[in-house]
Image 1 (cartoon, rainbow, N blue to C red):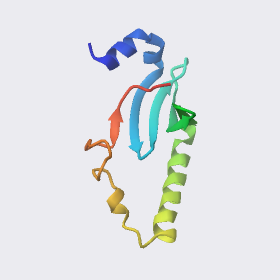
Image 2 (image 1 turned 180 degrees about the vertical axis):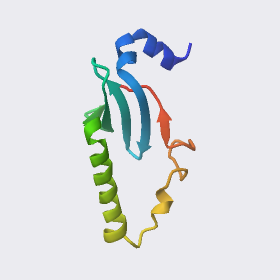
Image 3 (image 1 turned 90 degrees about the horizontal axis):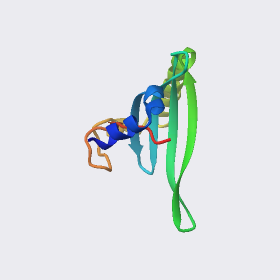
Length: 121
């Protein structure tokens, strides 16, 4: 049995709440984009940044999470796009940002920067 499938079957509430998930590895950080459902069958997005850190001799993951609700999706996307455009066009016009496009070098050797995965929470 697939390890991911077994994990979902072992936790039925987890399966109900978790609708869709994408993972993006970005250097020392990993970003999780998860669609979840509420008890009233509404949906929201969580964006989680995870960074591996060391404390004494043990590793731990520092997590920061944003909850984004459907009524704010468009405003969020527009603000993010305007901010990215400002950096690219006004602050750093000399940088060739195409070198960072999807399909470029990924540290894990995979061709796809987005991964379907179960959320670790």
